[in-house]
Amino acid sequence: MTGRVAPEMMRRHLRMYLVLGSVNCSVEPSLVVQEALAGGATMVQFREKGQGALTGEPMIRLARRIQEQCRQARVPFIVNDDVELALKLDADGVHIGQDDESAASVRERIGNRMLGVSAHTVEEARRAILHGADYLGIGPIYPTRSKDDAKAAQGPAILRELREAGIRLPIVGIGGITVDRVEEVIGAGADGIAVISAVTGAASAQEAVETFMGKIRRGAEGI
Ligand code: TZP
Ligand code: MG
Image (cartoon, rainbow, N blue to C red; front, side):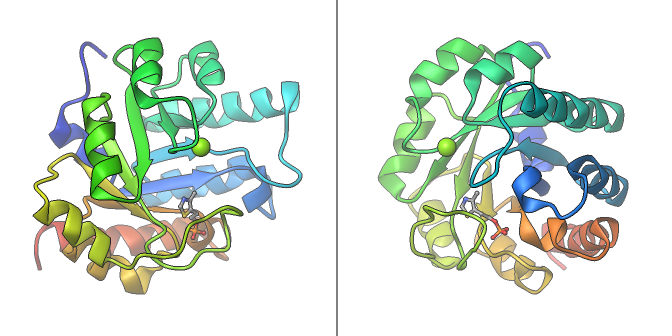
């Protein structure tokens, strides 16, 4: 990639953003990734976190496997939190939260790779933008069981508030998003949805993603 990702491209990558680690999967995570990519997932975040998460070589092996699947599907591969790992693997980007290293310092380290920052308020969003974020992750929108230290759910209203405050950066909503909630999330101002359990916990990850994609396309076309 030459230069920073264009906002229009970023918006497309954010449409159906699968976030996962081994802890979220009851089968081999790369099987879930394979199905999700076949279903049309537009970006994947490797988030190896929580009780029982892999570390060291097994973690790196899994990351590499998922990265290779993303490469073949021509879908960006993003690493959660771990800037070292992202650089070592030459990932397409990094996603960080408010408790991680500052966005400005991560931006310096990762050059033009994509940078996603989680934000919960207009102020956090503005700071992330100043510090070089390419997109904002906003949530939890709805209650979630997939993040131990999740803040209270804010509802889709937070998305509207950010847009009304003049925030134009690409936004992905996250937290408790199911197929039935897509319309509400996109309608409130998100460019896409990021999900863990609605895909990793589905009987068929491929069908789950296909159903999400159908809703998202209709939402993006304003139907
Ligand atoms: N950040 C905010 S909520 C969340 C993260 C990583 C978890 C989302 O998982 P789920 O299963 O889609 O609610
Ligand atoms: Mg983090």
